Image (cartoon, rainbow, N blue to C red):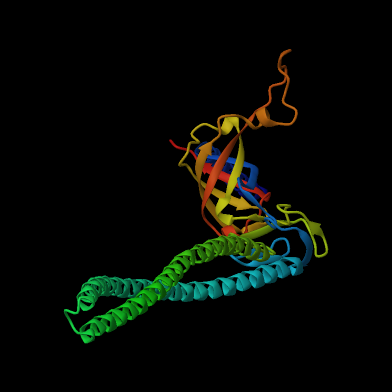
Length: 378
């Protein structure tokens, strides 16, 4: 009976020893094929600090809290906007008034352009007509003056003949009557000529006045140009005012997670002062501080399996993206001083960046720790 017990004990001991040896062999083999460490951290190179761009004031509402997810364009916080809304209203009213004034001046300009053009055409026609009448009248006067001159010569000749009793008195009286009529006709024509001169001068003055009124068109056009410049300036100011009003709503530029909230409702903030810090899950990576003794065979492209302590049931996979060229100790706040000699050998850790390729990346948060297995290149 005791012999059989001894035999069973030996068998059990042998089995346990075999299991331990197999486990040890597999462990050694695993450690030879994989670089394993628990110096693992979730990191990001880009922490997005968000603040109200070019506006300042009191925060009226904060909507998102730390750890909550956000979508592009989603409102995170609101600033009291009364001052900025009043500015938009004021500029809009001023712009509307200027546009009405411009429209009225354009109508006035079109009307005076038409009126002045019509006045110039009428004045030109009057001058042309009166000058033609004056030329015709001048020809008539020259003709009547020639007749008068001839009749006066005839009067002198007939008078001498009558005195010599060579012609009857009736003939002399006819000449004198014709001379009198011709003189009266000449006088009437000269009076008409003077009246035409006055009319021509008046028509020319009207033409000159109409042409001078073109200056009024130039002045109105200058006023319109000045109004257009004012309208452009006001439109630019209104655009900026509307932009500032829109900036009273703090919106997320990405789909990400709120990493930090720096202010609460009621706080007064300045332009650009951070209110939220966001993390884009696409920018997350795994930072591994791998001992220099385990570095061999670890190169960019090596696959890796990651386990995060916060989510032990979740599996993550990745690929080595970069093996940084300096150890973590080189960037420590108090680097080692080896100028006098180094007597304690310490295994240094080399930072390695792993790009995540598989797993619920949305669960990750910057700073979480875990464990990694990096498969070495043979």
